[in-house]
Structure formats: C-alpha cells, structure tokens
Image 1 (cartoon, rainbow, N blue to C red):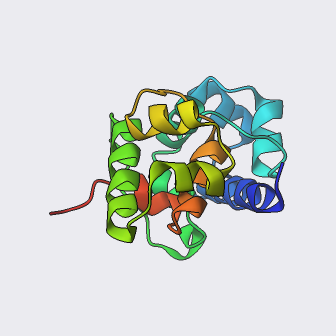
Image 2: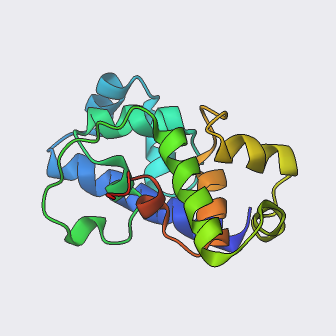
Length: 158
C-alpha cells in the first residue's frame, strides 16, 4: 500500500471515529447499526483497514453522516452534515472523473498510468460498472486527476 493510501485511510478512520463520537455511539452500537464487525470497525478507525464502497456507505448511513464528507480532511471542522443519500455513487464518480479528464485534456491512458491501475479497472470505473470498488482505489483515481475524493463523490451542479 502506498503512503498516500495509508494517509487517506487514517483520515477516513479518524472521521469515522469523530462521527461515531458525535453521535455518542460505542463501537458495539455502530457495529450493530451497520452490520460491520466491531473489531474491523476499530481497525478502520485506526486507519489499519481498507474497505469497499458498499461498506463505507453502510457505515455512513449508520452514523447518519455524509459519506463524501467522511472522506474529507475537513470533516471534523464542518458543521453537522445531512445524511448521504446518493444511490448511484459509482456513476457520479465516473462522470466527474471523465469531466475532469476532458477539462484537463487528459486521456484515459494517462489516468491509468498515474493511478497505477490496469486499463479494464479504469474503464469500468469510469463507466460506473464497478459497483463495489475499494475506497483506496477511488482515492488513487482522485489523486491521479488532482482532485479530492469527496468532490468526485458529489453530483456537480450545472
């Protein structure tokens, strides 16, 4: 795992912990609400464990938290967020990445090289065909296009 991926997991874990504490929840209570194992939640909060998108969504909903905000370094400084309600997250992510590639005049091959991902993974991500990617994979793509992940997880207003 790359150092920037470890740092992302530490930020995400710290935000999960802060979100849980804001709600006055124990790890056991969050585990019960999210269906995620308590020991794994503890490892997540310490930045020691990656997770898949569906698990991140499930935990965010259990916390009544905004998933993109949980991925942001600014989470703990932000006022209370509305619960995250996006249902087509991979489609939104892919659309935003394609838009950025176009704006920057980059090709998909450049993204593949920058992110260190194989062509089929990048192609499927950009078309919203991978429904449950790892959060670190999404972060790698965001980093490769020079954008924060939390921004790529939100619908862009036109």
